Length: 261
Image (cartoon, rainbow, N blue to C red; front, side):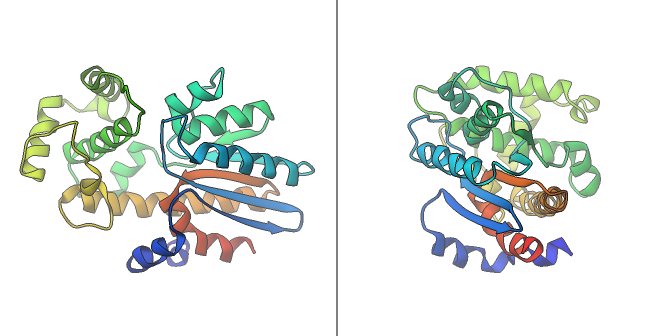
């Protein structure tokens, strides 16, 4: 049911052009509850234009929902608490700042995401190495959103590799970074360079490589999970503040307006 309510894939480019430049926002208010959705750009730069907008949008939400139970939702897993806004953004982009703001207001925070194990189980047609390459390209894209001077890439890549070697389900698989980069070369038809954008290889609306196909299938599963969890929180009587990437807002908005109004 949820899948059928999402924005159709062939309508995405047309609708995205109507929104203009991110960040995007929209609200739903009904029977004293409110949903505020902030469609972010994932920047790790504290001077990025989205952050004053996010702060103001959060403050508006806090004021409007002061008589209701509230929850904040962020993308990509829970973030560690930070001592100040700058470190929150540098370490966790808009999710880090939302965590900081929610903690100040004693608002609960959650991240409605599927685990890597759940995704692997749901998409058995892809090899573990191809899945790891897909996540590695996301890591590279995230690294490139850091403000200059960026952290050392090789050190960051080593930490990524160490983390996945210790995390389920990847800790059950014998893999090396060399294997991942070799698979990249086969798929991308060239050697990997951290100086080049990799967005085209994880864009679900392109058909360049296998990683685009993985992105489409992972994205669809995630959208359904996120929308279903939002509906559950809404039905429990909570007002909801959401900070997810702008693409998620575009895809989920028709479903949320149908389900929550």
